[in-house]
Structure formats: structure tokens, C-alpha cells
Amino acid sequence: MRILVVGSGGREHALCWTIAASPLCEELYCAPGNAGVAQDAVCVPVGAKDLDGLIALARDKRIDYVVVGPEGPLVAGLVDRLAEAGIKAFGPSAAAAALEGSKGFMKDLCAKHGIPTAGYRRFTEAAAAKAYLREQGVPIVVKADGLAAGKGVTVATTLAEAEAAIEAAMEGDAFGAAGSELVIEEFLEGEEASFFALVDGETALPLATAQDHKRVGDGDTGPNTGGMGAYSPAPVLSEARCQEVMERIILPTVRGMKAEGRPYKGVLYAGLMVAPDGAIRLLEYNVRFGDPECQVLMMRLMSDLLPALIATTDGVLSSFDLRWYDEAALVVVMAAKGYPGAYEKGSAIRGLEDAAQNDDVMVFQAGTKAGPEGEILANGGRVLGVTAIAPDIAEAQARAYQAVDRIDWPEGFCRRDIGWRAVGR
Ligand code: AMP
Ligand code: GLY
Image (cartoon, rainbow, N blue to C red; front, side, top):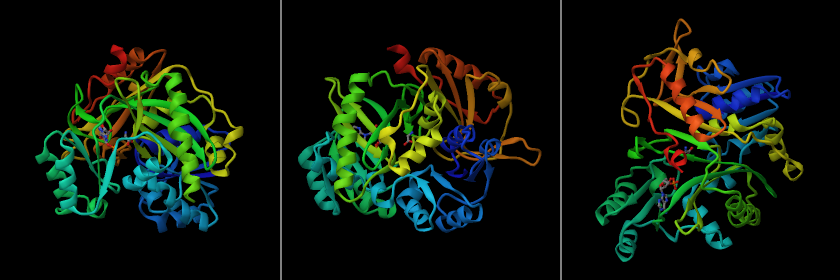
């Protein structure tokens, strides 16, 4: 098959690395990809938001199957557009991608179908939102309804903070159209974890669990980022809890989406909160693989991914099974100094081959590009995902940091404590 992967991050490098190894894959393209992806796929400079360009590319290269990495093109309807062009693709339709594209839609679906989540209200007027805020008190969580590149959520511990979040979104236009509607919801306490499942419209196949570190600094301090590291499995999600997540959250969502006339196909990424008393509630849905969670999932996957993705699209997951290594995987993200604020591009990264010389380590690349001599240059905020697999998380952590220490990139940094919670358990 001729495959096209859409996106340019570490997630897409992990997907291309995995798909390239499939005996089903004859030719692999990635749009736009990065310097690491170029080791596994032919990179074509068409951006993930350029829907017309992607359709033209898929036609030109006679692509049999497209795998869409990021949420933007899914919410914008890329899979629908490809279907109209007669090209099969992995990922939800725009109508189904509303699970991530509209937090209000997702919360209403939960309310309607009895899916456990934080109590909430939706608002289109700042004054009404503020009145509700004063009634509820703090802590409270203010969320922009639409896609906001991970910046749309404010967990407020003071009324002033929550009011500022409302004003920034609704009056200050901080998130454009994404912030013209808000969800205000109950603050939940506990331990966060992620659960991934493939969904084919009718049935769901659980994949694996993971936990990530969103804050930029050690000890989970400092500003939020796209994710500074992750590991799989998540110890807090025991087998019994995974079963509960399937029965109380994932499967009711699959049935609910079908009933709404928006059958969901693709990977469903549930962000969960496990309360101190063990109750599990849904924080959010994403309609794609996590980044960097995808990197650890792909390290742990024993089976061929590509037929599972195609079975998802074809609606035949019920007869499907995937095998996983029991081992744990952990990824440390190396970012350009300054991220998630301003950072420089163009610094040289050395030592990548030395870092990944053992089979149990993979350095997935995110914001990189090749320089004139073929050298690897930093070209984004999150730049590398140094990923290791080992019998347990502590050992995976040790191997990942050994590899990090072999990388020569003075302009980069990473957290030194990825996995601390699981290692300390
Ligand atoms: P979301 O984009 O909805 O996942 O929100 C981003 C982050 O905000 C989550 O990973 C949580 O750390 C936090 N968060 C979101 N909703 C809540 C909530 N209801 N209670 C506590 N923390 C939350
Ligand atoms: N790592 C979090 C995400 O992909 O949304």
C-alpha cells in the first residue's frame, strides 16, 4: 500500500517509524514531516492545515491510505474531504472530531449518556459566566470551547484569575473563535492518566495507558507545555480500572456518538482523573494520538499497527486483537531553551546516532530540519523525544536519560524527573 501520514511532530515520526516496518507498506510519504521522519518516509512540503494541498498530494502520489496525526485537520474535515475524493483515511470525520473540537459538545454528550465527568455549564456571555463563577466559587476551571493549542484551559484558584480567563477569551479574543464560547467546570482532584482506544464506529479496542508531564519544570512546576515527557503503562490504571473506563466511559461514548449520527472512527484518547477515592472521571477527549504519548505506545506495540488502523476505518475491529510488550516505555522530550516561551531555531544537534545505538532506545524527532550538510538542526519548541523501553519504568527512565546525556545540544534542555510518580510508587 501507498501510505501518507499527515503531520510534523514526534507523534508523526513514531507513526512513520512504525508504519514503515509494516509488510503492508510499500511506499510511505509524510506531509510535511521533519528531518527524523525523512529516515522512514518521503517528506513532502505540504502543511497539515493545507487541506487542498493534501488532497492534491494524495491524488498525485496515488495514496491508498492516509493517517492523520494532529487534531487541526481532523476538526477541519480532512477525513471527510479525502472520503469525497475516494481516499480512505484514519481519523474521525469533522462531525465526530467535535469530541475534541468543542468542549461544550463533549460535555453535553457526557451529560446525555451518563458518562462520568466534572459538573459544568456552557456560556456565550461573559456576564453570565462571571455570575456563575461567583455562585460556584474557587477552585474552578475555565475552558475555551474550541481548539486552542493546549492553552485554552485555566485552572483558577482565585476569582480574579477565573474572571481574567473569561475576559481574555470572550472580551480580549485570546483564542479567536475558539474562545467565543466557554465551559466552566468543577475542579477535580486526583491523579491524571490517559487511556487510548481504537474505535470503528461500533466497537472499541483498548490500546494502552500512559501518563504525561505537561509542566515545563521539574516537580511539575512552571507553565504548561504540549508535554515534556510520558510513560506507558500508567500504574494508576490497573486492569480493573481499565475495564471500568471501557464500560463506563469509552463504550457509552461510542454508542452515544452513533446515536447522535456522528459515528466515531479513529483513536480516542481519554484524559482521565482518578480521584483519591478511586472514582474515575473523564477530563477531556482528544481525537488523535497524544504527543509524546504516541512515542511510548509505538515502542510497546508488538503487532503490526497498519492493519489495525485500516480495520478501524473499515469497521471490522471486533475481530481484531493487538499484542503489546509487557515492558514499560518512557520518553523524555528535549526542547529548545526558552520553550514554551520564545526560543531560537537553527542550533546544531549532535550525538543522535550514539544516543540511539541500542535497540531499546529510539530518538523520535519533532521540530528538526536537515542543514546543508545533512546535519540535524533545531527547528521548533519541542525538538526530540528520547524514548526507551525496559522491564520497568525505573529502568526505562535510566536508559532514556543515559541516551539524553549522549546528545550534544547545548541550546536544548529537558526535565530530569520524567516518570517520578511511577518510579516512586
Ligand atoms: P484539558 O485540555 O481539558 O485536558 O485540560 C488541560 C489540563 O487542565 C488537564 O490535563 C488537567 O491538568 C487540567 N484540568 C482540566 N479540567 C480539569 C478539571 N475539571 N479539574 C482539574 N483539572 C483540570
Ligand atoms: N501530550 C498531550 C497531548 O497530546 O494532548
